[in-house]
Image 1: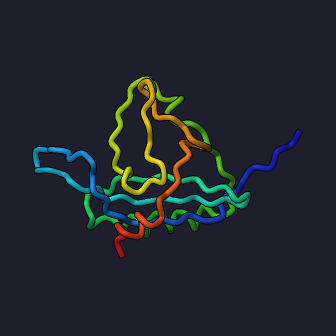
Image 2 (image 1 turned 90 degrees about the horizontal axis):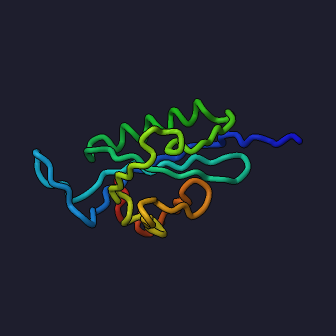
Length: 138
């Protein structure tokens, strides 16, 4: 039985700065907002994978978005090779969860018995587009 492997059609990256529900105190000060790059990987089979990266500084958002979209152009047409990275990680039983994206998720992540629960393919991340528009960095 042959199964067609999805190919990458495009990669979209957007920079946002979202408020944190719980501030993080560091030696350099208090972090009360999170500069994030939202990444959408679209396939030729209509499936979109979503993730985000913490950019550390608002100044890095534009260069990171540009870099990710350039990499996406290089990957266009190549097959998607998804796998659950956490499942193959030796420390998979440890949970470090910082809810950087909670303010822009359609349904914020839930922790049940020490695990982040999946709500669809991957973790089932869906963006709350009005919230994304509110925090979008142009």
